[in-house]
Amino acid sequence: MAKKLGRREFLNRSATIGLSAVLGKTLVSGLTGGPSFAAAADKVDIAVVSGTDYGAMTAKAVELIGGIGKFIRPNSRILLIPNVQSKNPGTYTKPEIFRSVIRMCREAGAKEIACLSYLTPQHWEGAGLDKIVREENITLKLIPREDIHYRPVPIPGAGALPEARIMTEFFNYDAFINMPVTKDHAGNKFTGTLKNLMALNSPSLNRSAFHKLNWKTDPNDIAHLDACIVDLNLALQPALNIVDATEIITTNGPMGPGDLIKPMKVIAGLDRVAVDAFCAGILGLKSEEIGTIRLAYLKKIGEIDLKKLAVKEVKV
Amino acid sequence: MSTAPAQSEADFAAPKLLDLVRFLPQAADLTSWSPQGTPQRYRGEDLFLYIDGGAEIYHEYGFKQVIARDYRDRKDRTITLEIYEMASPESAFGMFTFKSSGRGSPESIGQDARLEDYYLNFWEGTCLVTVVGLDELAETREGILQIARAAEAKMRLTGTRPSVAETLPPEWKTSSRLVYIKGVLGLNNIYPFFPGDIFRFREGIAAERDKGKMFILAYPSAEEARRRFGEAEKAFAKSPSYTNVKSAEPGIMEAEDNKGNSMTVRIRGDRIEIAISPLKTTK
Image (cartoon, rainbow over all chains, first blue to last red; front, top):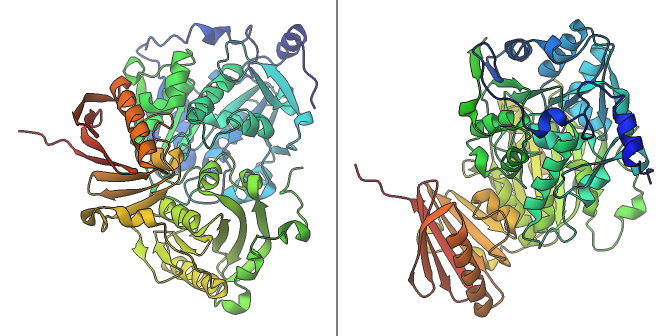
């Protein structure tokens, strides 16, 4: 069992993480009052790029929200968190998007680029991302599932998940970029930036705490799952979110196979709630009816009302 | 380094589990396609190692084990075969209906089969079989059918459909999509009535036709159905998602949702029936 850290010790260690791998109240202060959403004329909160060249679309989306240099610092160690659910179409982050982000990070002067995952080599191979890892010469660290490899992280203000358990290796990096594919989910109907952060949390905790013990019969199980996902997002703040909405399943998620739609879009933004709210619309869902999005908004993690944001859509 | 957990042959030879390896087509059973690598097998709660964050729906229906194997052709195209052993034929039928869309074409494989754009599902006895290609090419679709038929030829299982499927009104029996449901996850995937499990049914059937939906939810007794109907009445009245909630007469309730639908909820013996249809708009 991993050793629990005291609050003071935890904050001391967290402070060394820096920039955006944010854990602990002192470092999430930028979020506690909610981001400022006043849309300046030249400011883009959400960039949406359509096209067929996924790599170029990704680069354009990042450029529209200010360029990668706005989100990561030179000489920083960067984690990328793509989705490698399965090889079924519309269930994983596209290799071209992954490669594009790696190259942007490198051009911005990243000292190290890596991925951490508790999933198997077969997952990475199936999604085609292991090939990109090799070709782009970045690091993929497969983290064992045992709790000893995860560090307890208290979550101040949590409603359902008082403590996360984040991969210990995570604390060796300066920032992370959240790179989900948005798609259907059989439990809570939608997955995007907020849910993707479960990829950094202990898989045993994802099983034992995110679902109620008697989840098959507990009427509040899904609401509890949503609350845990949102609490986890109180503890972790991505430097940037880049979402694959090129080819996505709208049924039988998260693994599929299911009905496939091809919106052919890449979405980038800092605000997870806003990005997920936009993506919910792509799936034909109302953002206020998605538990994670609604609750994350209420917890002031981000803005649910897209009318209050600058959303820029272009084609490449 | 994390890999699928090592599982001994003895683990999978436990009584009451089918030997799924026997159902996997071999190279000699196929033309153009050959098995690749070692089959992956997961049992019980370990399903979440295979389906990260999405195994719950299988457990809601009743899951026992799965075996998955890849097949490749000379052009290096890949098809994955998955054979899920479920807790009962009803569970296998249920997952088959849940995973099938209303648009696929029926095929004569197993007890029911549907071929979609790039995948096929069929069920037979306690097994649900899913065969997935990574593209929609004609050769891949032909390969999907070939692999599915080769698996079916080795299975020879039988099972009966749940009787609740027969309780739909005649006009709904020819619906484009019928889904047998066993719990709130299945129900909410078709129509998210409430975030929680208000209806607490034992089993049910959902039918979709045009833009309308019909649900039959079954209970152990008429008394239980009445109790759940009462709970549902209160939940509809409290929920901001519904308006014009009214009891037309004892045992019948009407409401409108925020998606432009009207719905009628009624008790019929040990069942609750819910009909949803688009509101008629006047120009």
